[in-house]
Image (cartoon, rainbow, N blue to C red; front, side, top):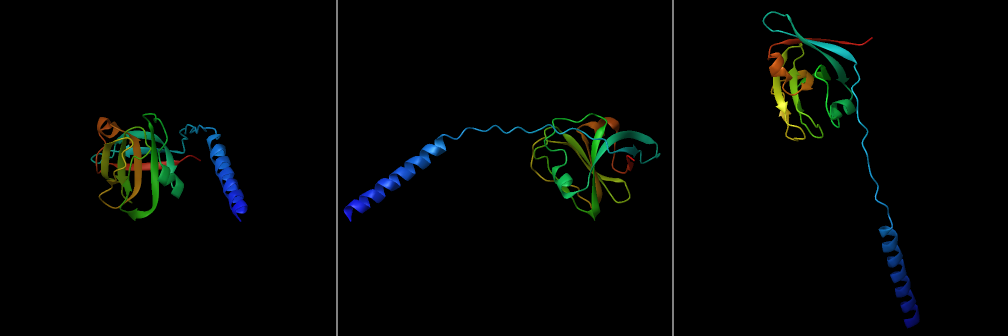
Length: 166
């Protein structure tokens, strides 16, 4: 009985030792993230609220699927000045965005179902996970480089128009 108990303990010690040794031999793996590039999928124009004259235009990507709307501009290093991402939601409601894994500042333009800018969040801080509310129900959201809304004079009440590439 004592011999059998001794054999079991020796066997248990060997199993533990082999497990520990096999864990230490694991190699460190390096994970690299591929750069995500911009794909022009359409154009978006912004018009002045008072005169309906053209204020500016952007090349845009669309975010419509669950994955696209959840990811947005995350994991990108930058965006050209004339580029943006237009989020299109199935219906108008309150929306909140955050800057998790977004590495550059953004202006977030919240747009109602009539294509009017209803509210804005300027210079959203990179990598900040605080929620940035639309404050009113919206159907669309346009993300552009931080500081552009001010430098281009974009204002609440301006309107947009967009088209998809054929």
